[in-house]
Image (cartoon, rainbow, N blue to C red; front, top):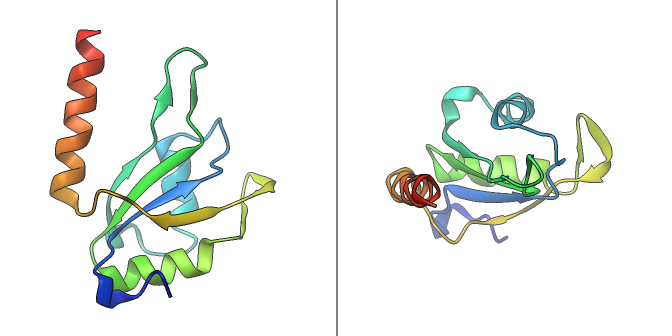
Length: 114
């Protein structure tokens, strides 16, 4: 199981996200599988040219066992507002709240300069 708690995975990457989903839409979707207090970071990168998300999102969970449970339940399921699209999940390359906040802050700072 790639979501084994022994691997300490807390951050997952969701792919095939409906293009019009905002971070709040994703939060509402996640609440179908876990309490809002079980995750502490949701990031949906946006394409500034098309004004839609980039069809992916990153979520960090407070505990790896909850990340594993949510990933195993959501993976392959249809999105609530786009039933023709299936959720695809894999462990994110960047793990943990602090590192994700640093990365997010760096991307925002770079975009602000460009």
